[in-house]
Image (cartoon, rainbow, N blue to C red; front, side, top):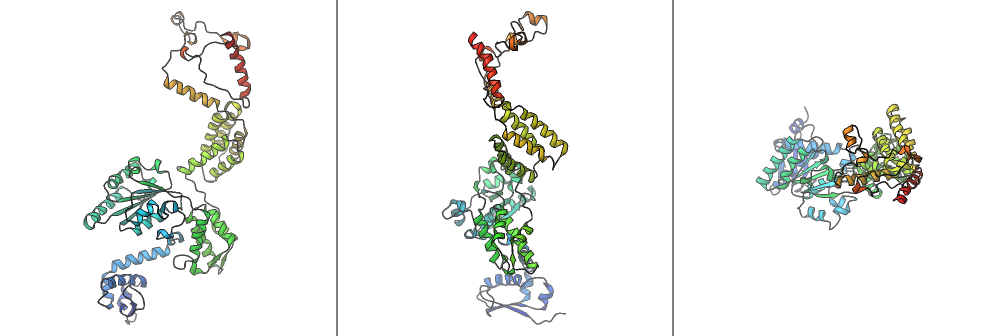
Length: 511
């Protein structure tokens, strides 16, 4: 049995240690009943007591503490969770003045900042890349307003969770007049039915919605909900922003790594900042890994070698169903079309290294060959199809070799989109003009009745003429003067253009 001698923590009127006017008495019974509670958790309850009994003075004994056991355990749980969180979580800014890199939306005088400071926050969607501060900004808003903050993740929450939140929000608003802020992280992962549940309560003001997403909300959030929200775009953090965040974490002794007494040399810091790719979370997690490894070995300085070892290989940002997927394939296509083998190879490897489906890339190469190289080099389509078959046959990683060959060939080939352009011109014509009957001389006389009706009459069989060509009309009469295919002067198509001019110029002379 432990000694029954009371332990007393003195607190001032605001819960300040050292003032004998108030004290927290923790007897052996307290130690026995709550052996795992930290001193700061007991003091948290004491501060609550002292706030409401500031004029009475006296001793707060274990009985009061015991009466608030659930509050003690909850505070202790939160405190332990915070202290055990990754560095990125511990260093999360708590005020707008501490937020780095988003002055375009929360700088002095900006609309959102004024709304936060006046406690008039509208429903909004925060759109930005990973690690740019979306969740942090939502927490700052929660701390700066009088509203109750209800955070959920669309990855794990469902309709039942949303209905429970709605019920509690109604109670708070009706009984206490307190607003609720519902923060939905990864809101793009909610399907239409789940987003529909939220819609009426955003409409009637039951809660204010803050959604966070890395994907374009125009595509991922249903239009009725999006029309009731402001979209604020967060920019990727610059290298200067990341450096400021990292340096702050290095010297912060309470939440950061300052208490470990470890420094990071400039080369290692710049490598960390460069590899973080504008993602503060990546930078802080990498910093913590390297500093703790150094501290565990008894060191005091993280050099470049240790930082590289801690970071290993960067995990590239890529989501095969998201914006980066479409942005990267777009950059790849434009590089091939623009005859830049270097640019095309860079984006090709970015996709391959990020785990993109190689068959998807191969299919895009086939389309590129037909659309952008076309008749300037008809062999390009043959090569692209062969590449698709080769990748399917041999798989990865060796399949990257034919993909690279085809990419360089297509980027270096002469370009012509004449076939694609002709297709679009004719498609537009067919869609807007009436369906003209097939001219009689182009019809096929399968039966004697059809032949008697004039099917095939006056048709000229090209092989019966010199050069296997004879001019005649192949379009309906109302369209006979239209020209849809305009050959380019690139590559092999130049020869085809000259041949067509020679053939059809004779027809013009005869006319």
